[in-house]
Amino acid sequence: MKNSFPMPTASSPSSRPSRGRPREFDRQTALAAATRLFWIRGYEATSIADLTDVMGIGTKSLYAAFSSKDALYAEALQYYYTTYEGLVWARFRAASTAREAALAFLQDSAIAMTGGDCDLPHGCMATLATVGGEGHSELGELMRATRAGGFDLLKARFDRAKSDGDLEATADTTKLARFVQTVQSGMAIRARDGADRAELHAVAEIALSGWDNITGSIDHSMQSKPDPLQ
Amino acid sequence: MKNSFPMPTASSPSSRPSRGRPREFDRQTALAAATRLFWIRGYEATSIADLTDVMGIGTKSLYAAFSSKDALYAEALQYYYTTYEGLVWARFRAASTAREAALAFLQDSAIAMTGGDCDLPHGCMATLATVGGEGHSELGELMRATRAGGFDLLKARFDRAKSDGDLEATADTTKLARFVQTVQSGMAIRARDGADRAELHAVAEIALSGWDNITGSIDHSMQSKPDPLQ
DNA sequence: CTATTTATACATCGATCACTGCATAAAAGG
DNA sequence: CCTTTTATGCAGTGATCGATGTATAAATAG
Image (cartoon, rainbow over all chains, first blue to last red):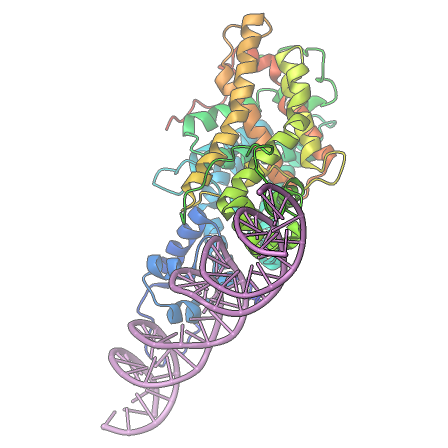
């Protein structure tokens, strides 16, 4: 690790005395461009020269505004999350049952990972990032924490469903959340490999087709056939 | 792409005239070490210096034996596949039903991705490789073809199950194979993030819990919302 | 105006990247 | 023996990596 970097602290935009020459480029626009490039190419494969190109600024300006490549990536990840989080989690939060929430999460993930309603890069920036393979331990930890956040949301929702009576008390919400998270991670890889939206939608559908079998008890479905509900 | 590289053609080991000094290192051992490092770190993050270290040879010997980094990676991928293919596909091939085959595939993937019976690196080298992100188009295509091979095996098995009467004639074997492949891909990411074997086994179990529901007809489970189409 | 502050462009830093030239060492054939 | 063939070690190739130093241009404060 070259140097430690500050976590992106939203850098309060109105606290600058602003005596000298103001910035000529829009920081958010530049950050959005950097995020997109990191999203597409990943951390290692994106060079500073690539970044300055798409951001439309020089190296000095980049380092003056974002300190280091690591810090820029951390900020890009935060920008990515805050900007696109709703694409994947909005319907999940609004769903009235655990099953609807899980289905919404996977369906909207399928949409987001294939470009959304505009031309977003395919795949998930957080899932597919290979930062932290060796060095870059701080960034690697940040990525892992980001991915873990998705699991936490899923598990919390399933736990709530248990107290709501929506899920059987015997349901293993941890395994359930891990499964949904795993399917979404797999969808990210498929999207990177060119899977289209219909394929990912089918995966989401199939993934939850056994929902009623597993939410009651997940220890019965190994060999004998359970009753085919609905 | 710096230079094109030959596909690993198994370089018939008995056809060398062998007039001069013979090679002092074991090519297969060196290849195995390189494979392991590529497996752990990925293509980009592994430098030639890293490789010569773990292979115990000098740069010149590496290039004399493997031509280029690209060619070495291609050969490492082939070594990986031929060496560990049985870990994941043996029980799959021996299974008598499509469901047992799919379950064996996912279960054995769970084992292989968490170290197998020795200390193999976690995760799947083919699935997690990010080669081909920008340049490296040949290697990227090779990786994509390798991943596609897994899908082909799954689909072929499911198709056979249809003629065997093991699967309903209405089953969509393409979607089914895509789903199983997606779950396995997700397991690779989870394994890279530190998931243990029990977690991946639970994922495999849950993934197939809806098998009986979906193998007959997969168009019945979208109760709440119609597909938002693309 | 001057003084101060800051952004930008350009050149460049040392380190590392994949890769190679060269001299030497060692094992084979004749 | 000598010659041929090949492997090895070491230094070094140009290119690119992330990151900076310097000088200049521009905008604000007083």
